[in-house]
Length: 182
Image 1 (cartoon, rainbow, N blue to C red):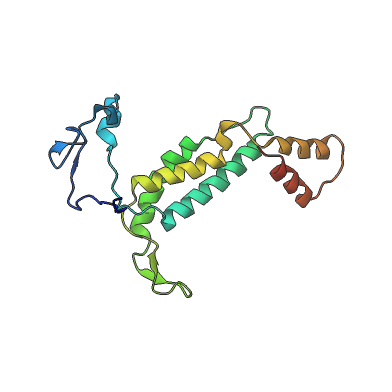
Image 2: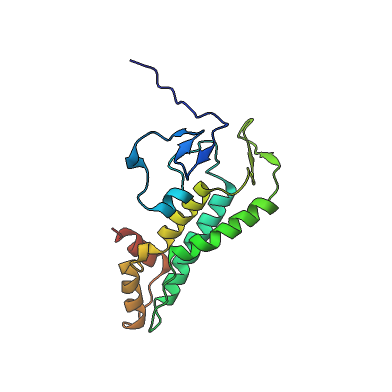
């Protein structure tokens, strides 16, 4: 058996999406890897750059904020006569300039935390990249409940309070909602 080695591409690799080539050579030679949509072929490379940072402070901060904000706002607006639904596309559009702004203003200094040994991290490991943007969008998608509205048990809690005039504690409401989710 061969060894399990991960081969990384040459760090001087240049992508040419118009020619579908890497360093002037055909990218894999398989036409199935190329998108049939010209705009996609011209904007998104079909290769991966493993040097791009993914689990960054910016990704976690913007992702968690977008998830919490979308879930709160969509739940808040569901009680209107004409409910307002805020989709993850809103966050996807808004997070790009915010992420680029954070890449400019956050310090690049590397920090070490006690208990992590010699490991260091930075609040700003480099320019805001596509991988961070995609993960922020995934967080936002989780917060928007995939467009299907809130959890069904929220309606049960609302009915108990509004129509039966009974109080239900936060812990009981939370346990009901968490345990009845699919």
